[in-house]
Image 1 (cartoon, rainbow, N blue to C red):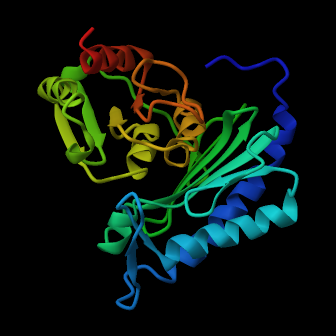
Image 2 (cartoon, rainbow, N blue to C red):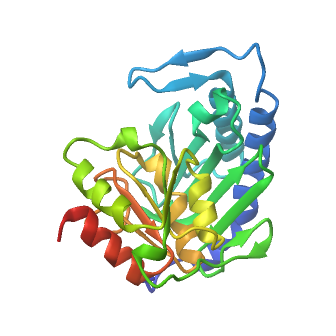
Length: 267
């Protein structure tokens, strides 16, 4: 993705400490409720689960944003959006992987993105239960727990390790492409949610793909993956945006990304 000449780099980088403060506050709110036998699980209209931890996490982040940057817009999974036409918009997923959260798996996370004119320029993948955090910020290398990290390159799909949240997410129309890709790769694994994109950015795996995603599921991933040297797009190869097709395909390098897109789309 090219960098606009008018990108306010200093302003974006100055907001990184606030993004980390949001992640710290969300971490406290979620860990206090993780693996609690008293935690009630509700079902939303889209049949996805939600808990008091999701709501508390988003609420505390919204409170901080209202205090520190009240002129910015916000889109959150639980409370919706406001000011989405503003120059800066924060996109929040208080618990990405609520199903993992409620079943005691540690591979859930909080996703925080800052978008400038619709472009994700600052992203945090925070995995509280695992004690790991990835931060991507325009003009800076991605870090994993404070240390720079990089994706890795493999010779091709046959050497690639691929993750997807669940094979159940693929529609009948998507399934042939997914099956064709699965037949080519070295290994496939499931149920890591946003943690898989952190693993990709750290150079431990090579490819992550997920259909049916919403902006709060993927906007934070873009600066993290790209700042580590990876490539991330929708299934057509277009940059991810607020109005994408719901597909996310991320790879360690451009060559592997192109191979994956070709197989998924049957080109």
